[in-house]
Amino acid sequence: MQEFIKLTGMVLRTVPIGEYDRRVVILTKERGKISAFAKGARKPTSRLAAAASPFSFGEFRIYEGRSSYNISEADISNYFEGLREDYEGACYGMYFLEVMDYYTRENNDEVQMLKLLYQSLRALQLPSLPDELVRYIFELKALTLNGEFPGIPTGRQYLDSTVYTVNYIAGSTVEKLYTFTVTEEVLAELKGIADGFRKRFVDREFKSLEVLQGMISV
Image (cartoon, rainbow, N blue to C red; front, side):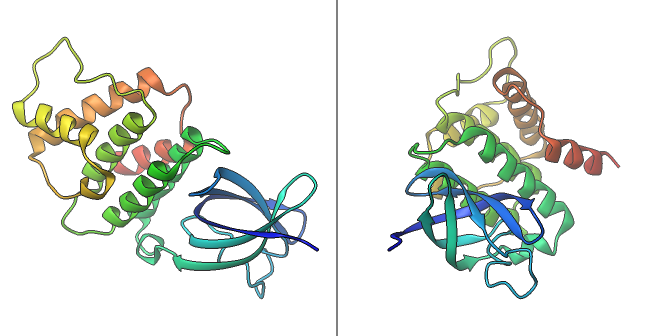
């Protein structure tokens, strides 16, 4: 008799397998990042079709096969419909998913990363917060949670408000991250700091970021 486990998490990406199946990468609270097969998920009538798509957050009922996880059922509590209806917001969101896929590992404690991802996607849907600001907060906090935040860069003078903002992001709980806005001057300095850290600490290019940057520059 198969034993099922319940995992709470969010789908980061999916890959078509064969004619009807999908392989789903999920960032979970209990087991970090895992890959699981969703059999029949590519069929329009499948009860796993909606669950096997990026941004889907909820509880997944999974059983362990000989060499892989397999999804039996899913109870999705948030599909982030607002992002699905907002092309620019969806591009930012896909970038966030790709960053988390890069940072997280199986059997690691990724609870804070999952919280950061969830809260950041929620923040993208808030009209009061610029998507760019959400992005820089997300990038700086992800770096901090990964243990790589080196402090304010040296070699130039930053506005006091920028220094305060960066230190607040690094030291704040995830739940209190998206509670402020900044001036255009501070936003520009945050961009420079976040871009510099990404080039320094991340050893790959993100396809979703290339798409996002191409769209913004148009």
